[in-house]
Image (cartoon, each protein chain N blue to C red):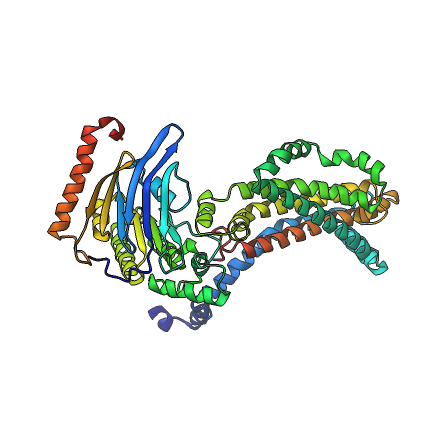
Length: 286
Length: 257
């Protein structure tokens, strides 16, 4: 204080400038931290993109090996204008969802049945565990013989791939519900339906969500392989067509779209998980 | 003398030579016990004496190998409710949802909620209905479990050492709460505990089980609320503890633990 009153003008001016900054540090700091937190994850990808663009522009990489990000963006714009891009995304998305719904529902149903009934488990679990060890993509040649390159082939493969993680995790979830809570439910006169709705299903839900997220990963993986090998539409088909004409930018675009769709599916699953598992300490909002 | 509340609410309980074997191991030999409506009975004994098995039989969680258990219906139709050693609350249901578990599904949702809210007030947890059980303390969780057990207006309340895991102060609070609700509602209560002084604080009658049989059946005719420094209570406690310890001396092998 004494220095500020006795100081010369420039010093005082400097302090005036510094004073408000000292008075509002909290929100500013919070903002800085938030921006830093959100930004931190993006530093690396943006940096890589910049290096990639520079390398392509400076001619270090041939256009036919890896086109510049700007070229990929341009390809996206062109395809968007032609209307092709959305058609392909739509077709692939519909296949993914249909396969996920079919495989997921069967896996969920069998997981519940085998978790709730010993008879059902004894009867089917061994068979299911054996077939689980066959990589479902090994069936591609067989599936092409059965279904040709129709929608049936893609649906079958995706459903098969999604089935196992959801089946295994639903079964595990039901089997690991706290037996003390089940006993409580029985002692409090819950009917089987009420016991299922109030105790078994909510207890199994965290595990079921793990299965769903695994299943979503496998869903995209299977679809990419299936569309690349045998399809007449969809993102994989778009990429394979582009390869024939050496349109590397479109191939890279297809890969990026797959990545974005995968991320989107995972985000949706996470949001659902957070919503329905609010009670769980790991998901409780701070 | 303290069964002065309305005796019509509670159920009469009659056990005639009830036995339970687990394989070759006989846990209960032959238990004969008659509990008049509205009485508060405490069952005590060393660990492994069969007292928890007896309670599970009363709760229909298990069937007796021999003998009969009959429950004369009281006026209330809420049946039998069991309060466990652990709270056993559903972690995915809020406090109110957990209490509603105890209310019959036959009621309309609005009246179930109303009943559950009323019970939360009774156990001193008004305003906590929308909390998750995970954020409650151990004593509060047992209060929720008590509210759930009483939500159906049971004729018979079974308590399986529900206060065992609580700290001393919370324990005394819970004992008073249980006593008050029992006096209010007049249900028949059977408390299993290994704490002799807890049994004497709460019960009209203390039944000691030893090696699968009733070894001692003591009436506790003292006015409520009972003070811990009551000399008669102390004398009774001595008598029961003496029996328990002498029993241990007479038969070293099973009491080694």
